[in-house]
Length: 478
Image (cartoon, rainbow, N blue to C red):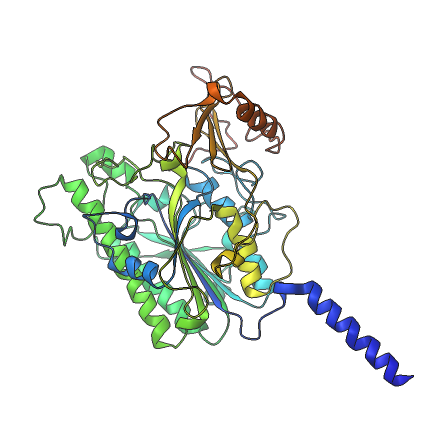
């Protein structure tokens, strides 16, 4: 009888293990690093066709991992794109859908909270943009053990700030919330501390301190975003300590600076990779690299100068491919095939379930739009999304949908749908809506249920002349 009971228990355990499938917790969970550039275009890296800007470390990352040709940002500007990345929801469902200063709420679960629940040490270095100090949306309220950087998008325009925000164990005695951390080297108009250097040091310190634990590091650089305020004042908002190695190029100064910013960021990513190797974490760390949206034409630069959008139409603030299709590299030696190139389409909201499957986390929120692309990382086939959805709110609302190879763009709610086949017409030059009414009708039917209605983010006509942003939602400049 006892033998029968033990047998039944063993069978039950085996069935339970089979049901858990790939979500069983690994014996040695890999570290996860997500590096996010700011306003880096699809064509700004050598491995994506860039001919002038040097990015040897990111090109090496692609050669040692998997390069995706059809990865999409959350949307075409900063805050909502990052909200999609953190919450696993697309921009019709995630809390933050525009660049006004609305925070995440307590019930919004982030990937950091999911990984923290799986035993990971969690850190954010760089730009947050999902909740100002004193709100429900700060990093330490959403799963990050350590944070150093910018809460506000506007504050993040500064490359020589006089202070950044900090939270973590070392600051608990001062405050349970974020505290201002002064950078004395930048007071009185001095420029001694370039904030990206600080972020890189913070990232390597985080790895050093947490190397004996599984960790999640979200390294959100601000390059090559423009310092818009400086750009308006001087004509050059591309702020960098040196324009090397492009000093002798016959380019406008802002274009030299932009290239130097990207190459400097590439150098710093190389340093982080060296730390992983030095601590023998290299083969047990999954590194993701992407940009939050397409290339910009701000701060004195033009996206076309360096062909930053590559073969794509549009830039930042557009819902054409150039505004939302971004470089994405994933490296995991020994697990992801080196030099692989994937055309599997996926988006930022897929990162949360992917990270959960990599880590073995089981506390994944039910209300997400993402799917795990872990099988694709392993070189296996998987079922793709039926639909992708984006919306963008700035002086009205725009929408975009991808269904298979079909891409629909609606420039305002009172505008007709434009339709493109992005497989045969990557540059979105030939609007075929008139000859495919059945496809347009299917997409219009999907749009009826694609989003959650929101008083804060209505799909509305452009504001009337003189209409102001509500006082409770201060506008952030992105």
